[in-house]
Image (cartoon, rainbow, N blue to C red; front, top):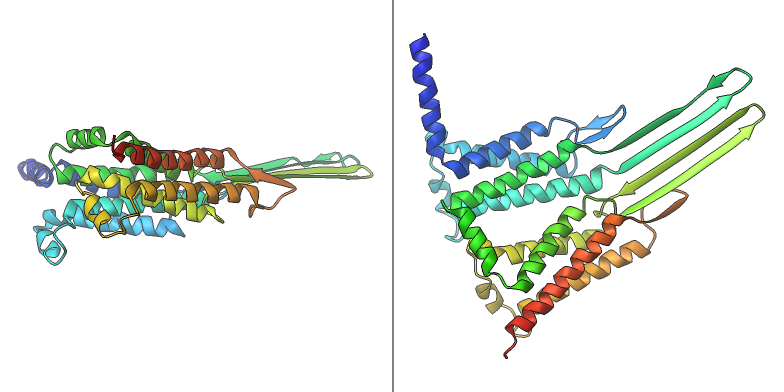
Length: 327
């Protein structure tokens, strides 16, 4: 029995080793993300919800698909047969990176829309009966949700490693080769997507009253992320800029894509337009009434950070234009 166990363990190790580091990272990230989905992604004092609702379902399904795909060689099934019907540009690594990016975006939208940050407190007393009635509650996205985001990002990293054995050095070289304007647009859009999970609007209210020997006070506050109102348009624009500016990092040239567009629609103008429109959408969303109930409400710090990120994209587009202008 011990001999059989000793022979089995090396066999499993050899099979996992044959997958390659990139595929192992994809498999590990997918399995971890799937397992995390059964824990509370939205937490409160006495309430919690897993990732299996809303946008979280999309992320969970993508975790399942990428885990199965990465594990196919363990079942002696080669993915190349499935890829033969696809265009040559849609390589296995790029498909996995796309799935990881969509999973990460789904988690971001889940945190921004399904997990509002809420706090509630009340205090009261009934003097005649000698009773005191304090209470408080709070809720919002849990750390598990952010770990799910890291799991999705691990799938993207694994896809990069599958594309090239020296992926880290190649990506570093590709980033260094990007112009300052493209770097600024990429950084602004990537950070902007992360800022979507922060509070963009908040509301607070306090109600107090007293009647004879009875008094009570109730205070509540609520904040929501960027996936609401015109913020949705801004988020989609941020995602589009991330995809566009990250294409050179995976070996895709944007020149072929630009060739199919009108000559006046340059890359610089696309970036300036996307950044400017995102800036306007966020600004209007901050100024109009936000869908948060309460006695007083207004924009929160996450919206201001997103506004700066959108401005960085527009500034990056302007720099791309000046960099490509003839001396």
